[in-house]
Image (cartoon, rainbow, N blue to C red):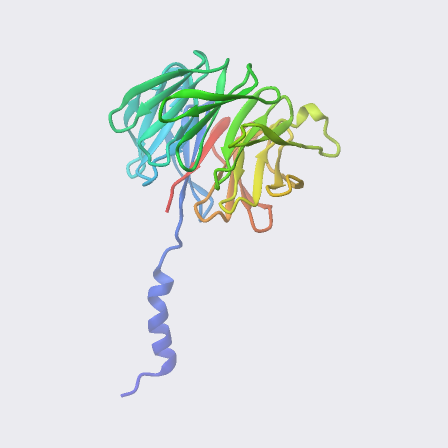
Length: 324
C-alpha cells in the first residue's frame, strides 16, 4: 500500500524537529560576588553559577573548550574549571594580582599581567609552572597576542605604553607610547595592527605591527555626554578584519568602528559601565559585560543592534565564549 505523501513528509521532518539548536556557553566573571555565570547563547538564559576565588576578572577558555581559566585576582592564582562539570579542578601559578591574560594560539602558554608587581608571568599550561617573568611598565593590564603567536603585547596603565614582547625570547622588543591609562590590546586577524584602548585618554591607538608606530588614533564623541564619560576599554575585531567594537565604559555604549577607514559608524546603547567584549564563534553575536547594571548584552553584529540583556552576578567584568 502506498504511503500518503503528507505522512511521509511528516515522518521525514520529525528527526529535524527533534534536533536541539546549537548553543555555545558564555562564561562571565563577576568581580564582586566571586562567581562565574554560565549563560546559554541560544536561549540567552542563565544555566549555572559557579563559585570561584576572590575578585575574578580575566577569563578565557582552552581552544578545545574543555577548560576555563579564571584570574582570581585577590587569591593570586588562576583557577582551572572543567567546563563539563563546572568544578574547579586545579590552578596555575599566576604571580601576584593577576588581572588579564591571553592564551597562545597553540594553547600551550598563558601570559598573565601582574598589576601589583609590574610583571608579565609566562605559564606552561600543561606543566602548570612558570616559564618566565618579564618586567614591564607600571600597572600592567592589557594583554594581546598576534595570530602567528610570535608577538605578545602588554599595556601598562601608569607608564602609558604598549610593550611588544618576543614570545621566543621573552624580551621586550619595542615600547610604544599611547594615551593615558591603556587597558586593552587586540591584534587584527591578519597580524598587521594592534589596537590599544586608552581609558582616560579616551582614544584607541592603532599601531602598525611592523614599524611599531601609531598610524591612526580613533576618538569618540557622543552627543549629550562629557568627554570624561567616554572611556574605551575592551576591543574586539571581526574575523574578516573589517569592523571593530570598542566598549566605552561609563558611556554605556559600544562603538562600532570601520576597521579599514578608522571611522566610528555607530554607538550601541547597552548596560551601565560596559567593560569587556566577546564574539560567539560564528561572529554573529557580540556580548558585552555591563558592570554597574549587573548584566550582559547580546548584540546582533549584522544589524549592530542590542538583542537582549541578561542579569548575571555582581559587577560582571570579563567574558569568554566556548568554541564550536
